[in-house]
Amino acid sequence: PRPDAGPGASGYSQSTSWAWAAKPGIIALRPLTLSDLMSGSFAALRRNPKVLFGYTILIMAIVALVNGLAVFIPFYSLMSLSESTSDPQASYSDVLASSSLSLISMLLGYVVLFLATFLGAALINGVLSVTVSQMVIGTKITFGQAWSMVRGRLLPMIGASFLLFLIIAIPMILWAVGFLAMLIQGIESDIAYSLAGVMFLIGLPLLLALYSLSVRFLYAPICAVLEHKGPIQSLKRSWTLTSGAFWMTLGRVLLIGVVCGVIINIISTLISVIVMGAGFAFLSSASFDDPNTAWSFVVLLIITSALQTLVYSLVLPIMSAYQTLMYVDQKIRKENFAIVLAQASQGRG
Image 1 (cartoon, rainbow, N blue to C red):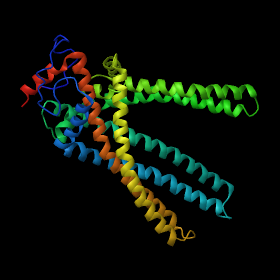
Image 2 (image 1 turned 30 degrees about the vertical axis):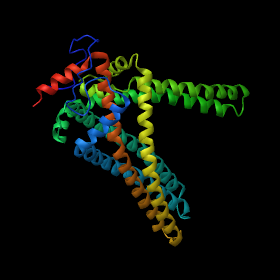
Image 3 (image 1 turned 60 degrees about the vertical axis):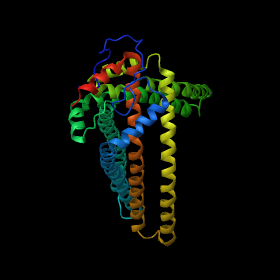
Image 4 (image 1 turned 135 degrees about the horizontal axis):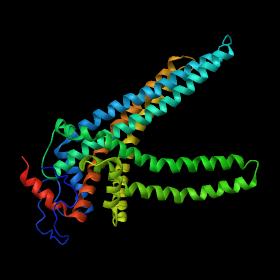
């Protein structure tokens, strides 16, 4: 039996006693505390590091490779543009063609960067959420088993994630365009300048409102995978789960954000010190007249990107496990999901 049975599947009263609190897997089957969420997340990492860490590192390595190409191609175009503009024999049409190519390559680079990161995160969250949900009932699955459970849900999960992105991004883009337009017009008009000030003041409340929406829709991608719902239904389901639990959800999200942020900053600082030391050592002996110097900087940038990818590969499983356990906890609190989990754990195998 799957631990992702639909809401209300148990049909039990909300007054269920939690004294028994069976623990077939990484958490006790009762409402979870912050300590339970953290210990459960790290227990998941200890019990199945091959899937949680190995798969994450694999996907992030592919993303880093694609992102490296996305950085390299615009850089190569800029180098070609620099050569064209410095060549006294180059015609205006040659320079214009190089400029157009550089602009297009930069735009394509950013698009590829976004798509690779977005799809990589979706693939990681899907497999990890399934893996962690199975460990809740004491089942340790392989990557092949996790993938077989996720592959049919990839499009709905990506759709839910993309809808959430649009909900957050479109208002911010409209605000930024409006603010910049008013600011530019304000050079010639005091009224437009005043409107730019109003737009600026609107920015903070808008940011808070959009962040609140992201909290309410936090479980949408998980619902798309574990509850087999479509993108819109997943958003509605997440809204229902977080109804009446916004502040608790917000506090928990902020906590894991701080924990992961501290881990990232500590490791990133060590990496930065090493990379900066290597960079200074290189600069002290480099000749800026040598064209190979620029390419050496590209190599250094790629190495830095690879190391940063490794850092995020260590943190993403923690975040994913934590959010999956938050989802399970919310279903336990609102729908007596512990009964379903207990039955699934007894019938597994």
